[in-house]
Image (tube, rainbow, N blue to C red; front, top):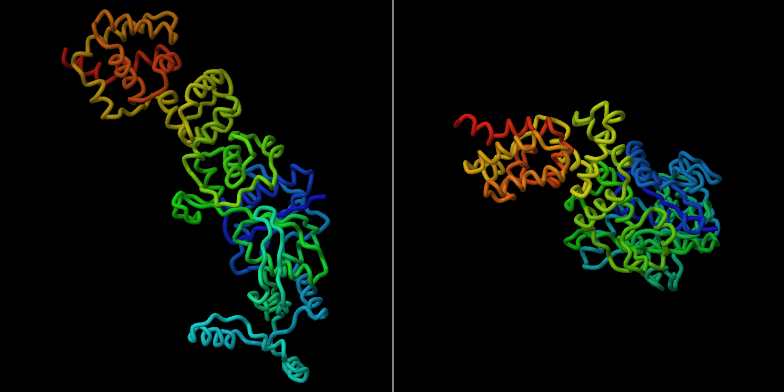
Length: 488
């Protein structure tokens, strides 16, 4: 049975890299009928916060990532907060000491800092010199009797540590380059290496899928697995995510919190699709995936060894594609909160005007990349308080030669029957021909008159959706019509 885990530290909101790691683990578990565990690594109490835990959980849920075991769902290996598992780590550290795989270190932080500075001053690097490993029994007894603070250091054996990474192949480290690392601090708090290994053993994790930045941690953790006489899980280190400038993704590249992308109007389906393809390939040219498609196609063998580039334009493309895939009913439900927020929602959109709302959404869908764009695109349809783009007025409406044809077009629209896109287009083109006016000139003038803008969906579909009364009123009140009456 495959068991994987996502183990974030609640020192910040769920960022893009963490979300991608969680997604890969989740897809792998779901593909193989395995178990996905959520574990909160909150031993860094000074930097951890409950708000951040809520932010991480909220981000995962928005993406549609659920877990089989975790803080709120429970499970056979509870608790799933590391802060509630401290005694387990202390017992694990003691087992290492008892087995001769670790030893007590009484060196103070000040002494270690002095040694480090001395090594650096002489131009060399510094690793722990195993001073406490060689302490005679009587000195240890004296220090213990005096209650001297002590950490626990792992005793790195000689030789080499190697593992077969499922992405990168065989990776090996010379143990001589790995210092005797601390597993339990002098305040009896565990370090990351001890807590993560103890938890992965106890929770029976079979595969560890995580970022490339953890590769350097892996030899220490494999040594711990061996000291605990446990077979290590299989490791798959996935490429880091870079910004368009090929530097590690950070705040300078824009939003990095998953929840921020929700606020910006991205669909979770699009974000999942986009994240899955950051460093993974299905082995085909397919780009658009549903969640079910991804579960069916995902394999660790498809993960690339090279870094992935976060391309905001590509994310916008995915979002637009997934917006187009939504049913109009689903999309209207997602848009309702935004329209309410901007006071553009009408109570009869759930009743008599529901079908009209759906027609408007269908008309606008191809034009938007993110949900908030719907609000601006829909404004001319949902309110009569439209603002005129001055540049558009100057370019398309402020033309004396159009005044008379525009008035006659308004009259033609008043009598057009039925008031549909095809009839309205025929009326405009017939009038343009008889007036010797380019149809495009009348189309643009009418567009600006009824929407206030130079750009919109197809004019005649817009006119039909607005309806005869609103079109007549807006054309009558347009700057060109008003100016013509004033001049007359």
